[in-house]
Length: 424
Ligand code: LLP
Image (cartoon, rainbow, N blue to C red; front, side, top):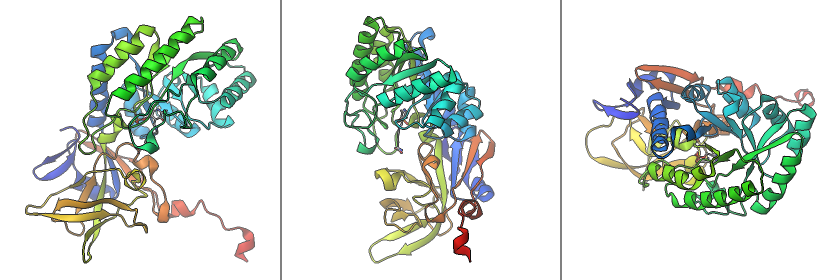
């Protein structure tokens, strides 16, 4: 089996029963399916292979902000994927996982000198420049290092991605990218600079898009602008189209991968450049779940609360974006459904995973799974309420392995210090 399926009334990850993992590693526990990670890469690749010629296949640079566990990155790296990074920490992660620097692109509006130097010295494929000030800084640092550095300009197309407002990035008043007029001027400047190599253009309009229309609109603007740049005799090797492909959390229409690939074929391919994609959620999202356990059942006058051992510090998406994560019983009981509010132990009402949710009768110590937690799950976890970060496990067929140990309270406390003047 691949992914998360029931067999004989028990929820499995690939061929491993979830209760066995919970007994071995404890809960809350992030569980990833290697099979589903591979399948997602293959689904995207086969749509691209159908639409685009073999020698024009895009570099798939996995947006590792979605899931940056070293084992996950290693698995994707062995499939030939590169990575989109947004920090020096992520650069370390992808290189440690064995992803070659020439498949790494670096986005983000606030890169520090230290982070830029690390990227310049690692000779990554391209640094995606988000502002004039950043470009000047890169130029200075590249000169100091004596290293000609490939850069791409992030274009803000002013397109509404029609997604949650906190994860839309391509509207003119979002903090990302630059206007075409500004890029045009800076492109010439960079081309004339001894230590910069303008390598192309990049954009990313937002995340969790299931409708292909905003992609089409944004890529048309990108292509028109790329043509203008090329017509001026400026070099343009790569068009980086960002990420954003959505997944099914509940009842969304699945993104039409063939249509997506055809948009790239029709709009981007004719420009004759290399092509890069930066999907994150699409690859990792439904390849992971958060396995947790019921700590208490609390019956109030109106509501029956299922209180889990996982909270908003472990999976923040419901609290932060009102996101829906299906809750599945790991070993469902027969009988009528019961209505619950599923909540965590954190001291905020916002620590609610879902309200008015029907589940088979559930008892204390039962295991539940919060589905589609493979992207923006563990990576956004925090120590709020001094709760240790959960452990992560990778399952591959019959095999399973711990890929991140559970943090301990001691690990957390060890970073605090009490000044001497308070200890007397
Ligand atoms: N490239 C860039 C420059 C990005 O900023 C992002 C995501 C991606 C690629 C990958 O996008 P994806 O393919 O995963 O949609 N924490 C939020 C999502 C934030 C996305 C930020 N940028 C959530 O949990 O929904």
